[in-house]
Length: 556
Image (cartoon, rainbow, N blue to C red):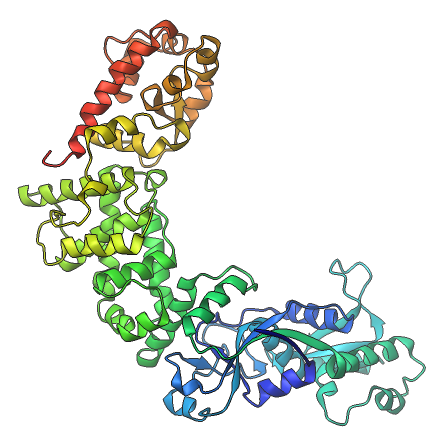
């Protein structure tokens, strides 16, 4: 990778002669007119702009990647139906670039396109004009020095008819443009504002240096994508999933303009959000790979060679319904978002549903109830045993292999039973979980103990015997800050409890409320809620939790 610079006018020539291309991984152009104005003003004030990055490709026709031309500089963005789009190079279009080196934009699309519009075209049929009589208002709030505006021809003529002097910014791109000649020809040589503005405009176009990094001698698409993800600085940070999804969108557009892959994926994410869970594009794309029984590498090569695009397009309804059904089950299992510490664990459930066409299943009959409980046990164990904490792709492949061609949800052939099966030793370890990590375990205990949480409410992890009281009485942290002394309380109730002594707090309740609190929080019926009895309390409550977690052991 080398660090280079080029004059602005040379950049614009490269764009207009198609010596620069966009990979089908970039977001569409999104800048608004004011952003373009600010960029031009910054360059005229000789402020540096962020360094760009390009990838030198010797022959794009040899790469399994699609490319776009830059937008026509006369940009339209009036509506979704009246909006300029980049031209996709088809196979014949790519052949025109055989043995012709081009620079592919990795970082800088929005700025280059904006410069191209300002210097060569228009935005919604308005061209960029520069005021030669007045600078920008001093109180503009953006540090603008020059008065730059997008105007229609009629708007500009109205201003000129009032005696104002305005120039189209794109006149500077004319090969015979001279700021001095323009000033003389228009009687402005003694106009200090005009002279300064035109000199800076000409200097910007002809002399300003645009700095960039150039990746050369590297045709490994995925290594370049990794650089893209790390360095892309425009707006919202990109992920590898964003880039691969752009490729998917391009493939779909070739066959069906009415179906948009990005909207399809965003629809899946929204449906899951409606169930009170959060997933992202990377999760959805990984799920596609699992459902396809393909390699799980998130690379362009995988998506091309495994024909992921065609598979997803053909099965889009079944895939969407399978993912939605999987998260519906997670909700029915009694889990909240905060307890679902690994979303990857849900993918095998979606896989099982997809392969067995269970998108509409109710799981009411005996056989399906068994599968319901098997899926629940798997998910709870995967969470509590951190199954996907390391080598997640390998684990996903092995769980998928164990489920392949199975009509029942069973992991009997899973290669790593010790990593998912619950044991007495692991249960005892779990009960030593401290407050900061306790929510998932307490949520699972509630689900298994038939005391499900209300999905519409928020819960806090609370110390039953408060910390301050325990410290004052010399109680060890391994006793007061672990699961047997923790409970899940509705956030509003926890705020009102406010670290009160538990005996005092429960004394404020009526008999029915106390009975309800004992039942909802697995409080031993014979528990004495005095600090002197905390060890006995913890021992008895540990026994209750051990009995509940026994349900997660094999053959239970």
